[in-house]
Length: 419
Image 1 (cartoon, rainbow, N blue to C red):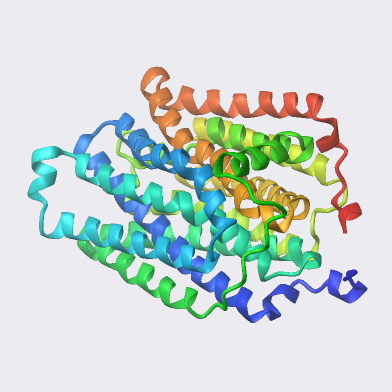
Image 2 (cartoon, rainbow, N blue to C red):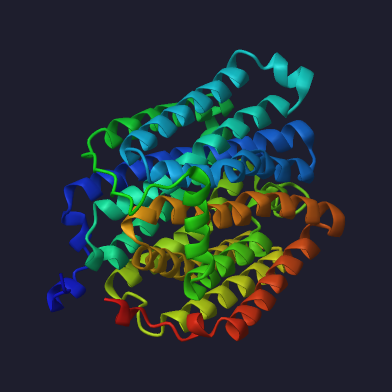
């Protein structure tokens, strides 16, 4: 259906879809809990080990299982009921959150005997769950939103994620700091359980029929071919992957919050973690009214350059408030990239391949986030904390320049013409 003039400018159009509203609410609560947990785990592991490299190992512990099953998870998302997969994965998150609470509250002697290893094991299991959750969520969302509202839904989806990313880490740090780790973990358990209840309120959607019967190998091969033969899609997700892989500093923020640098404790760490999302949500509000569709390729490239510059200046800042502002600005630029990449993926992917394409995208995202966390920890140990972050931001600028030169279709992309 063509987009009407009024509909184009209705920033709240997609929220009138009941199932999408429930989806956003459930995803917000689950994301809130997961990101709250990440702050708690990061601070706890750093206190146990007092080693910046151990923070990188948290990302690696989640990335290994996540990346290992991501392609297969996309195949499953294209074959089975996506809502059921989401509910099952959310329940696994619930069990893992409960395990972290019990480990700290009742079985802390295991942490004394084995250090952070039991925590890494639990995070490994969450990685498996996340591998199945992401492609199912992405594919399911496209089923409950009409094509003409993909940009609007991507904006709100990103907004909700970033609101959770603001509140989750901040609340996690504050509860940890003022009420202790046990209460912080228990809060995570409650919120994950609540998200499952809201997912149950969404109507199931039939899985789109496959064009032909394929073996698992053929199915995965088809998905990979689709992505790697599409210059726009491949370059957009590759650019995002490498930018966050090298430019992200989230994993080592506990070091910046520690006494040797900004000296702001777990409460300050929560605000540092939340700052990029605060900037992102401000940009999302603007983009809800002014979608970045015209000259979208150039805007994508400019936003990644802005992100890289913010990371470089953050590394050399020794003022807590300036650091907050720079991280917030990094979120402003990053959210433009996120919304454009997600819109590109939704527009260019056939319904019966959404799970597989989302899983490939999740591999790129997982590489940038979890492997990026490991890279940050390793680089910080080898180069030092500040030089490693400067190096990462500089690599982001270099990679953006390479993408601008060798991906002309992305550079010339105008999403207005796709509707």
